[in-house]
Image (cartoon, rainbow, N blue to C red; front, side):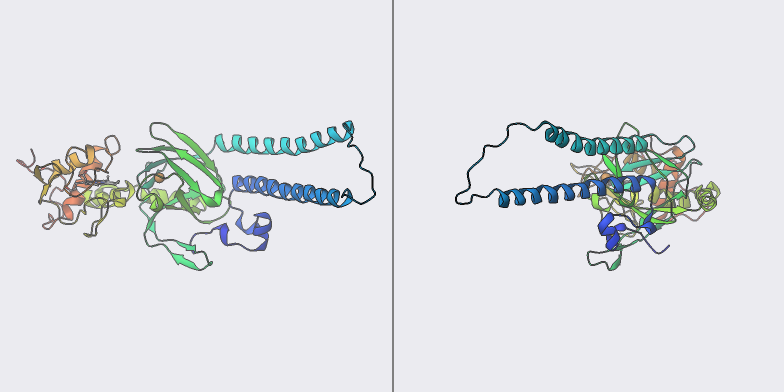
Length: 364
Ligand SMILES: [Cu+2]
């Protein structure tokens, strides 16, 4: 698995017919590409044909000294029927191909693997049928304009899907409209808040594909990417099983994973580097000032409130950019995140001393 495959940088056959047997990514991609190339070459053929006729007539019927002008015929029924029926047939073909392709894309086969996809500013999250979420991130390689392979600056979450099995994504957003786009699969689907949309595909080859957001959704829209990794089905099962994190590892370990999988990583750093939101490094136990006055010590209650109702206290110098995670995190997950933030403080508690619990008297 040496990075993202992308069909943009392929050679002559790709240029001519958008089709390279080696890049047989998905059935939907094949249908879409075929139709696209059909329309493209049909347009080229008609253009050449019509321009050719025009030039021919211009030359043939040009004004010549001594030649008498003739009146144009007003009607020619067989010719008129031909130029109506023939293009109509071509267009009807386009309509049915497009309609069937779209209908196919909407209705997933009943034996599909259903994976939940959540979009938010600015991350994707997939929840697998066993309740697990990805704990894997990776940089990815992609060709730049000159075809040279470059490596992404940031890590992206890696999502796995089984090879040769239909996968249905049940998609929704927790904030604004996003759009799930896998360029290699040639289809994109909008993802809405308060409503599920569905998208399905069947990957036909092992390998990585890049996922983008195709809906401008704010500052870091362009960094809302992830990697879709196609694995043989047994390996896919083993991977998602290994992602179902057992709690005995302790809340800090779980919090560290949730930090990535719940999208906090998009806005919060844990090493002090600046980002959309404040870093978590060393904030535990510190006093924070808020926009419009007021201050509070960063403790479990403060962190909990910051996660569930972020708009009540806006940290000084930061925008009111964080969405509420009310309903997105259960109590244990909240505890794990609190424990993780605590562990990033200047005096982290020794392991096994009840992270994430609010000591008596702390808070409001
Ligand atoms: Cu987006």
